[in-house]
Amino acid sequence: MEEKTLYTITIFSENTVGVLNQITTIFTRRQLNIETLSVSPSAIQGIHKFTITTYAGDSEMMKKLVRQIDKRVDILKAYFNVDDELIHQELALYKLSTEKVMEHGSVEYLIRKYNIRVLEISNDCIVFLKAGHYKETQGLFDELAEKIGVLQFIRSGRIAITKSRVERLSDMLAEREKKNY
Image (cartoon, rainbow, N blue to C red; front, side, top):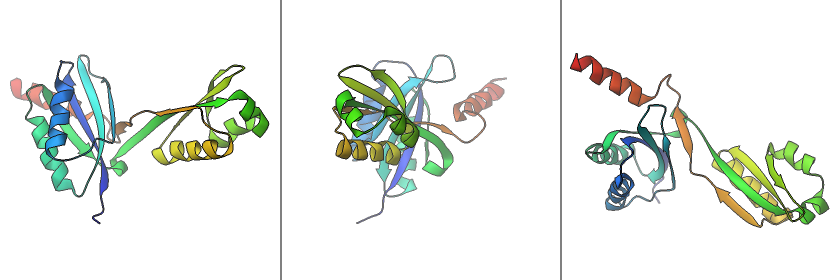
């Protein structure tokens, strides 16, 4: 089977209705599955940032995908990166039975061992927050599910920034500004 690489696609657009549908249609046509998706306002006023991960066989496929996305009227710019070019994290929430956690040992032990935050403790449940890479959040889930039992679990999409000094869109907008003068 062909070895696939996880790519992170970053897309900048104005916050308009239907942009996400346009983007997902392009992924569907190319038969690429979206692994994670995160959308939020960017550092630039009025611009939203989509962070999408997908697996693909090679960078040529990603170049074609990004060119297709860039052609959309509502898209300002799209880029793709591999993990080495990014600083990235995801968040995970774990809800556990308070009784089961106490049977297992102290909450402090779990906090220290896994570098987690406690968001809520009640008589019925404890909710933990873990920030990290996929392997870390999934590894914690696997261990907690086996040793204690997990009542509920949710993981966010990837959030990522490039290792470059400024957002790539800032560079592109500065270039456009120079050309207009």
